[in-house]
Amino acid sequence: MQQNPLAPFSLSWSFSVSPSSTTCSTKFHPEPIHPSTSQKYFTLISSKQRSQHGLTGLQKNSNYALSRIIRREAAIQGIGRKAKSKKQRNRLWPKAVLEALDEATKENSWESALEIFGLLRKQQWYDPRCQTYTKLIMMLGKCMQPEQASLLFETMLSEGLKPTIDVYTALVNAYGQSGLIDKAFSTVEDMKSVSDCKPDVYTYSVLIKACMKHAHFDRIGRILCEMSYLGIEYSTVTYNTIIDGYGKAEMFEEMESLLTDMIESGNCLPDIFTFNSIVGAYGNSGQIEKMEKWYDEFQLMRIRPDIKTFNILIKSFGNAGMYEKMESVMEFMEKRFFSPTVVTYNIVIEIYGKVGKIEKMEEYFKEMKNKGIKPNAITYCSLVSAYVKAGSIKKVDSILRQVENSDVVLDTPFFNCIINAYGQAGDLKRMVPAKEMIMNQVKTEYKDDGI
Image (tube, one colour):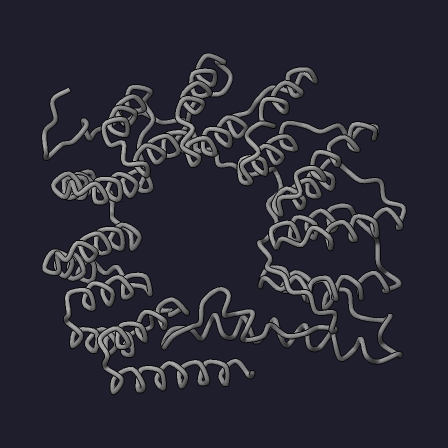
């Protein structure tokens, strides 16, 4: 196949409506939660917990986010105060408790969520519901807290509730996310003994995802055989989950074989998720020709690429040192009115920075800002690393000034990047003030948050 350097692997697509994207998710959509193990009542989200998601930098426009945090913490704190009062412990206002529980889960504080749920169960108006348990167990699964999920399941049984398929699937997910694959399989077996609660395609998709995540590839065949025996048809999610897992494990033969099965089934057609999984698998492994081939194949299937597809192509070409093709993808996106995102520019900036193409890196950084795309901590980290590698330590000072005058959300990797930059350059005079600036910023943030 002849290649045009300005139009690699036939960068084009049909403008017909493509199949809808199908991601590897279950039918549950609870809010993501992150855990802690302390048993104190209504502990506020601490600075340490927030640091897991990245420390906030000099944020000029953070009033909304900050006020939301304060409102949530005030609500939880208020419930906590009432909980300590013997007179009011069992007479809390339903709306206040339920809102506090909802806010705690939304703000990724599983400890607070469980403590509030404990209070909820003590109220005279409390009505146990499987839906509430499903959300909490799913939350604990995402937070890698399988033991807590198991305890919550036992609590539900003690209240006389009959587990639904949703509750069981949430428990399978909780075990699977933490790599407790045997317990996940055992839970599926338990489901089979409960009337009107047989595992369905979503349950098996969760189980498959867990096996792929923890490299239990030998169990996939067993799951698929069991699904067929029970008359459960594979869904697009089922196929996509396995294809994505095989791709990440570089099991390309198995990946392509399953794609063939998917197409031949006639019931589950490949979608954009399938597209990106296969193109990404070959791109990440440096098999550019295979990546290009499958890009064209999916075009023939009339599946349109999305921004993630282009980011995969850009990163793959860049890592392979094929900079002309990388830039041609950027040009193609512009012609097709596909706006690059901060992720797109971060990929290009990092690639040029790593190979010492400072002028090119700066060119795209400038273009990024001219288009109104705000750099983030990842952008600045790439710039700093590139300047240090090129011996341009003075430009790191410039980056710091830009950061101080922006509302960029900083994180721990950025702080480490700055300190390491001055440390590698042996510039202790600059490293100490940088540390002080960072500590002052952190103290200011925590003070503003009332910590």
